[in-house]
Image (cartoon, rainbow, N blue to C red; front, side, top):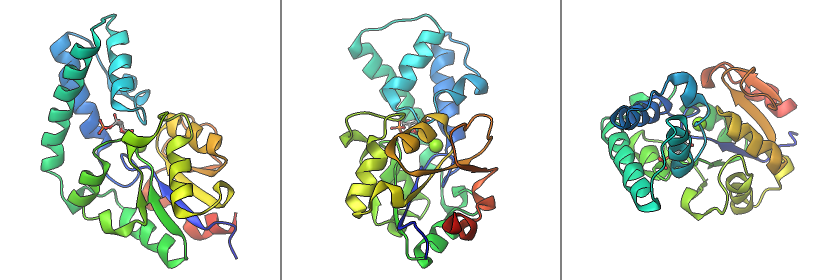
Length: 216
Ligand code: G6P
Ligand code: MG
C-alpha cells in the first residue's frame, strides 16, 4: 500500500511544452518595451502568476506603469501567448505526460492540476488532457499565488485527500516552494540545482519513476 492517494500536477513544463511559449510571449513584450529579457531571467518567472511576472520584467528594466497600463500590457502578452496556444495540439504534450497521469490513475490516485495559469483549462483541452483529471484548480480563485501553498491546497481539498497523502510535480522553484509549504511530497522535473527543496528530481516528465515514488 502506498501512502499516497493523490497526484497533483503543475501544467506548463510538466504536462505541456508551453513554458517556452510563455517565455517567447514575454520576450516579445519586453522587446517592445526596450527591456532585455533572457531565458535565464525567465527562470525566475516560472510558476508566478501573470501580474507577478509582469512586475518582475518591468523591475528588470527599471520601468513603472499605472495599474491600468499594467493590465493592458499583461493582456497584450496574453494575446501573444494565446496565438501560440491556438497552434498547439496533443503533439505539444510533454513526452511521458499522458502515460504518467494514466499510471497514476491506474494506481488508484486521484489526479488534479495546480497551475498558476488562467489559461490552464483551455490549454488542457487543446492538448487533449482535460478529461484525465478529477479537478483542475482555478488560478483566478486562489488568494495567494505560488510560492504560497494555496493552489495545491485547493486541489487536495477538492479531492478530499490530506496534503501528506499528495504527490505533487513541479518544474519551477516557486512551485516546489508552494508544494513544500502545503506539506506535500515535492517531485521536481528539471534541474535539481534550481529545484532545491524537492524530495526527488527527475530530468523530465518521461523519466519519472512512479512505482518508486509510490514506495517512498
Ligand atoms: C504558469 C507559468 C508561468 C505563467 C503563469 C501564468 O505558472 O509557469 O510562466 O506566467 O502560469 O499564466 P497565464 O496563462 O495565466 O498568464
Ligand atoms: Mg511549470
